[in-house]
Image 1 (cartoon, one colour):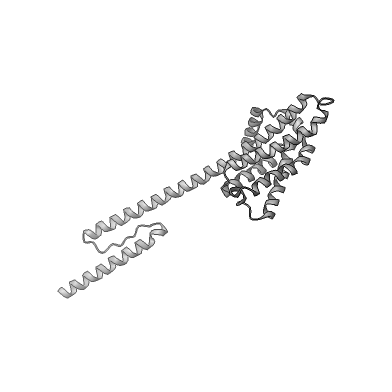
Image 2 (cartoon, one colour):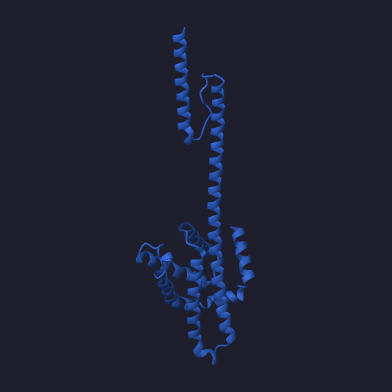
Length: 240
């Protein structure tokens, strides 16, 4: 947990979300609450027109639920509280995307669409008062804080997505190595048993412990050896 907090702080320091920027971001909370709904409407409208992404949703109800959860997540972003609750939310998003196989290019595009709408809404809101009461620096600082928070969220989601893929790759690699080791053990035991059989020893069955998928081979080999031994005993008795 401490390491995660340290990594988060490192990200915040590097991207420039300092105390001043976070205060500016929190000041946008009400605006984001108003603007995020229409922004997500634009995004999900695009999703409905894109079969490669739409296929990840069962129906409109599923999509509406995802939109509601995303709106809540943007509320957390605008609060500027990048703590445990926020980290859990981003991790859930990244792991879900990895599990579904949603490529990063699609939700990077999604961030771009949503951020575009938020910027448009911010400028429309500020423009009437820009020359009278609001300094240009205030607008640029607000947009910068919003952009940085969005990029931070995207960075974390992609990083978690890649971590999940790497974990899956390691699991697959471990399974592959285990299968190879089991195959090698089975082939070695079978080769030794065949060597004994070639030397005329029909008394020793294949007794080495094998992986479950090779138990059938082991049973068939031992049955064949037993039948061969019985046949040889019959021949010997007949000859005698």
